[in-house]
Structures are given as structure tokens and as C-alpha cells.
Image 1 (cartoon, helix red, strand yellow):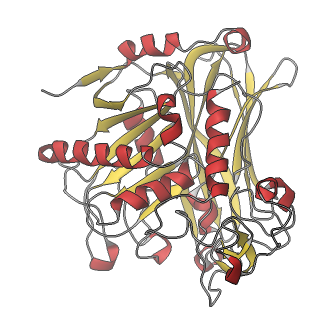
Image 2 (cartoon, rainbow, N blue to C red; image 1 turned 90 degrees about the vertical axis):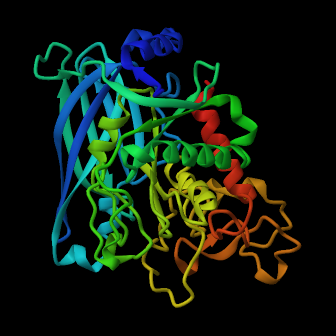
Image 3 (cartoon, rainbow, N blue to C red; image 1 turned 120 degrees about the horizontal axis):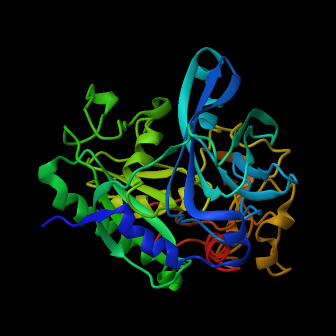
Amino acid sequence: MKRLSVVFISVVVFVLTAEGGEFSRLFADSTLRVDYALCADHGRVNAYRRGIRKFAGWAGRRHNLDTLALKGNGQVTMRSCRDGRVMYTQSFSTLMQEWLSTPESKEDNGAWEMTALMPLPKDTVEIEMTLTDMHRDTIARCLSQYNPADILVASRLPVMVDSVYLVRSLRADAIDVVLLSEGYTVAERDSFLTHARVAVDEIMSYVPWQRSADRWNFVAVFTPSADSGVSVPDKGQWLNTAFGSHFATFYSPRYLTTPCVWALHDAAEGVPYEHIIVLANTDEYGGGGIYNNYTLTAARNQWFKPVVVHEFGHSFGGLADEYFYENDVMEDSYPKDVEPWEPNITTLVDFGSKWRRLLPVSVPVPTPPAQMGKYPLGVYEGGGYSFKGVYRPAFECRMRNNSYPVFCGACEDALSRLIEYYTKD
């Protein structure tokens, strides 16, 4: 029998997570969802509010409300209209900002979807969404207001979804992750649940998730697709699936993404969630992970297990890719005069803000590759797709190599600190 979850039942769980004090004074135990349209035209960028609505229950953090763990490539900030104070902020990255680094962006235009979730304020607030480029300069800004008395802010009715909890914590501050099905027909529901369990088991087998197992909720939500599989443009294969995902994003054959971000959030609203993992019903190799946006992974491929961990490292942890190309085909991905916001790569512009504190003073900076045996954690040149000028913490890491079984010490540390940020005052 299918297990059904209803939002009004989930509200009980949400209520139990109330931590009183400042959060309860400023916010109701509900979520405000703001949808944005991000538009780019020959390098010019604009952002527009597309929709706004509220629904019962808030699954996000109830502490560290006005501070960011990582800068990301964008931020949403809620300010009180009474005194201008920051009430809540969150960072993220988007697919559009990656597109801006492609030659196509200089000659064409496009639009992308983005969704921000925030606790529902009890008073009128201003919401500012900003996007930045790789030099940390603001390239787009969208200002809007939310007034609790506004009758045009839709109140989402309870929705029924087909959900199964795979991991459920007793902690009130547990991190909520939803796994969504992409390209699974009604007849393939059981296959999706099997793949979801494999994904969660694999993620939780890695340090530091293994050490924080009591701080996580993982719930699988099944949304059937008309077709089985996902679109593979290189093969001329275009399918009708729940979230319209496809390979060959930016003409990169293995880059699997979805343009339908709003639909992801529509599907997830029936359960408490902060982070989204999408499992694609395909044996093609590939995936994608975008910070505080989503992970999308091919669930039938032989590399499914390491790839889902790698991509969740991107979407949850904000970790950068540590691999690189020796012919520097992507040498401009990270400007060499700016310190990247990702915690596991550096240009040495501000290395003190990265893993410097984890290194003994004897470790040479940069660290010669010939000394990788002597210095498991160092500063090795090559990372963030660049052969020169960008440095990574270890010679090998889960963020560099599919066959490497663990995260390096700097990635473990960054993930651990992020888990603490979400789950401790």
C-alpha cells in the first residue's frame, strides 16, 4: 500500500521544532515561498519576482537567522520595514550564473527559474534578492515587500503526496532533505524507492554525515512521469518527464540539470524540506549539483553512488569541483585576483579564511605534488577546472575523483561546520 503524507499532519512535526525566543517573536511557524525569474540578454541580467505564497510549517533553521554560512553566488535577505534590521538571510547559486560564463551568453538570451524559502514573518518586510558575478560584483537585484495583510499572497492548501521517510531524526533541529523522482513511471515507483534508499545509505556512509546521523531527515516523494528515463539530446532523445531534466546542459554531455525549479518545489511542498535531491531514472553517466538549489543524479549508472555524494557536496556543502584540465580550457572559471567563496579551493588571495588553520606550519604553500605522501593535507595547484592559479587541499578527494572513497580533511571540516551552523546555536 502506498504511504501518503498530508501537510496538516506534518504541521505537528513542525510545531515540535519551535525553539521559542527570537524566532517565535518574529515569525510564524510557516514558510514564505518566493519564485523568481532570472533573465539574461547578451550579458545583461535582470531578476523579477514571479510569484509569492505561504504554506504551513517551517523546516529551516531557527537560529543563525541573520548570518550566512557561505556567500554563494546570490543572497536573499529579509529586512524589517520597521527598523531595517536583517531578520533572515540565505545564500545560493543558480544555473544562470554558470551560463553567463559560456560564449553562448554573449550572443543569446535566456531565462531561468529560482525559488527562495524563508520563514513567514509576522510583520511587513522587505525582501532583497541579489546575484553576483565571479568578481563578487552585483549583477542583478530584485526588491519586493511582503505584507501579512496582502490578500493576493496565496495560502497553499494542504497537499497529499506519496512519501516515505527513509531516515527520521528525533531532533527538533534536524536537517530536512527530500528526494524526488524524475523519469519514473507509475509502474517504477518501487525502483525509485530502492534508488532513494541507496542514495541515502551512501551519503550517510561518508564522514561527516556518518558522525551526524541523528541530525538528518531524508524523505522520498514519488512524482510519476509519463515517460521512463530522461532526455538525452546527444542521442536525439526527448522525453516527457515530471521535471523536464536533460543531459548536455551548456552542451556538456554529462551535465544533467532541470529548468523546472518551481516544479521541484511544488512536488516537495507536501513534506518538510530544506534541501532537494532529484534521482533520474537513467543509466547515462552524469549529474549536477547547485548550492542551495538541488542535486540531480543518474540513478541507474554504475557510478551512481559516488556521484550522488559528490553532487550533494555541491548542493548542500557549497563545495567546488577539485578537478582541473591541463590544457586550461576553463581557466577563467575563477578569477585569480578574487578568493572563491567555496571553502575547498583558494587562489591564495585570502587563504587565511580557508583551511590554513588545519595545516601544520611546516607544510609548504603551495605544496609540491611530489610531497603528497608527506602532506596529506596541503595546498596543491590545480582545482576549480583550472590547471594554474587555483589550489585544492589534497592531491585526491571525493570532490576530485569518482574512485576516491573519502572527502579530504578540508572538505570534511567545511561540511562539519555547515552541519553545526544548521543544527546548533
